[in-house]
Length: 130
Image (cartoon, rainbow, N blue to C red; front, side, top):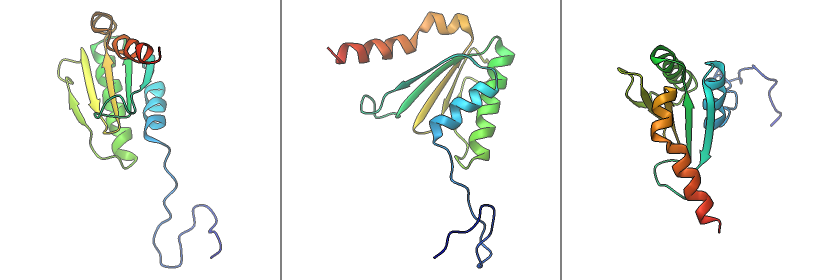
């Protein structure tokens, strides 16, 4: 069967679905678009049954943290990943967005510094490599 040109529906009338970018790339691109700061992605494949990646990022204020989370939730939904589980959006000090294979933590800078969760995970991986 010959390949269809892009944006062309097959004879059956069913729409052609463009290939989706990997979930981690969608999330990192969305965080960048939302002007999230100091984004760190930690590959936890094989280290945790919770997810394959953990992403930690910051917003400048309560309002920015909430806006980043809202933009991420919308991008996930719009790209066929459904509605993620979300915790902490009401206070917007630390918002957790569970997108399945990727867990995203969006912090205000002071809260992120206090918990330092990405440092815990990165230290754990460094210890495993010795």
